[in-house]
Image (cartoon, rainbow, N blue to C red):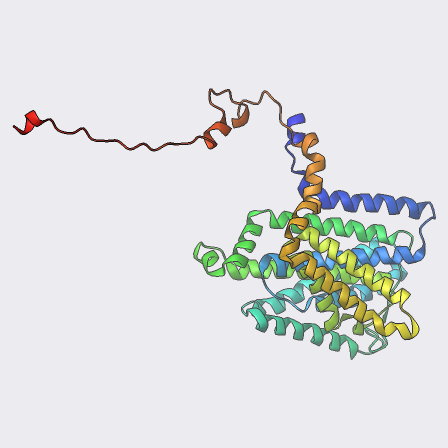
Length: 380
């Protein structure tokens, strides 16, 4: 049992531990009544941004396809899930059952839209796919904006019930853990290896028997489902869902989270989503009145500095030395990665006459071999 505990790859569960600690700390403060409402609202939005960034990372980072319609799938989940919650709040109450049904409806509808759009769209590549997904997001937003006030609120927006603000951020972070569990296990499975193979070389993946269309569609649908779930959570954080929220700029903001965190890095997407959401809210709070025009400028400068830090070759050594993965590996090196000294299967503890390091430092001297001169008697 101890050896099994030691052989666990703790780096894989670092994000679960970090989010679990955040959840425990802030939940304790909320239950004790020591957490301000502004902080609770920020935590809700950070959790929603993490779900969006991690789900989009599946398409952009691991599948290698550029999608600009993630806000459109979120819009579908927010409106349809919010409408279901508004209908069910009277017969079932504004409780966990209504929330679960709304999440199921919003996620499934967003996944269905992902299938309908992805089936023809994923045959496209590069800029053409980006334009198609962008058009889908704008079409969805325009449709909900032009609905009647009785159905989805029209231009005014859809009125949605507000969950208990004291506990809702806990549900949001639980959904973050669910998102991480599904997407990380998918990536580490044989299906995830097929997805990354498509990203690395689609022709080679197709030649080895990988069903490229099926795996592309699978990644697209899974990402759309979690975007729809994030939309339902968003509808519960707001008292009104407006179509203007899910515009092109919001899709770009989600994409920026993925790119800044590193392509194909789930932990990086989590950190970038947290940082960007926090910066947006803090800048909007601090810069008010005439200073509000500086918000986008300061936000852009901060993003530029982050991009320089992530991509500058001169900072590569600093990033490699002080990243979270290496710091955690140093802390757990002696505790979890140390094997027993009597393990005879390890090459560095097998008794040998010659040390392994000595073989690497052995000098070989080449000497010239001189041939013997023939005797004169032989010639005679």
